[in-house]
Image (cartoon, rainbow, N blue to C red):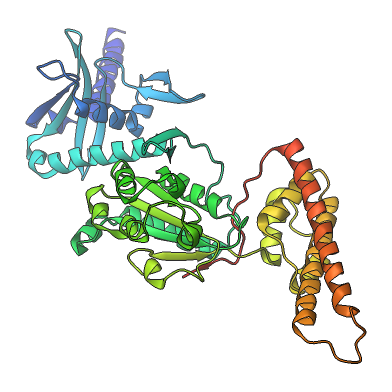
Length: 462
């Protein structure tokens, strides 16, 4: 009986030994290690910024989540859960094939992370590993960053508010091919710091968004900013007193920002301030841009670029041109899916025929009609058909009216007959459409508040 107990005890000991060998690996007992301490404060009791970066990095490790004991803490945002190391807990990590460990050491009320690396791996991985920690921390901070909107005041200073615009590149109504090209362009820009520096160019990208009002240019800017996690600086040129004031505004902007100048064509055609065109050109692409830091996206919006000097839009000042047209049938189907959840309907053939006849509305106008009638998709589509027919009739009548006015009346024509009638019909139909659209806007404002519509389909990236 004693012999049998001895066998059981020996088997138990061997089992513990096997577990220990698997957990700590016997080779570790014969390895020479070097320790690196990262204290929370330096000798002058100033914060050690590396400590926070290491803390964020360790808390992101999968090994911490899989460890036997881990603290669960509430984050700054609602429903956010954060993992945190326990005092004197050790977590292992692997980098470039080398195994390292971090220990959360507490001594004399001073918190310190201790990094343990084999001496034979130190020269090969220490610096790349620390750089890896910095990169992970920067990506983490960028993801959780709350974007702000900055607006310039009459005193030449920026004022900020939280930027909570709902538009994203995933939800915006845009041709999928164009959307993918825009995403690819922005992602390539984010990774091109060394490339731009090697070329001797400032690390920035500039876009021109042009098209009629209500086609989603502002929403597209918001979607870009959300995608990049960049702050937005909205430059109101009417509040800029002179060229020097504009330069000061640019100097006060930060890196990782989207700088927006809306309705640039209106300023160029009829500016009312002492700000000069030369000052705007230098703002777009001057020496001052190289003094304001890297990683910026500049966006300019216009209703049309027909009356703009091509030198103002040359490559270097504007890299990407995106046209925002009025709605066509393909864009309408995207809006119907987004606003009404309708992918197909018996009224679609009629709508397609009306669009092909040349009738059109802006995405904002169609979107507002759909919001008002969102409880009944059929009623919403019928309302869109009515608005399109009124708009199409008014355009046709206006064109015929212009031809009748421009062409001298023939002797066989009765004085004041066709041309006068067509002009009166044109005015009447336009008034009907405005009354209908004004009623829908009033009803929409009462029920749903203001509208902010995304860009429509079939845009062109040139």
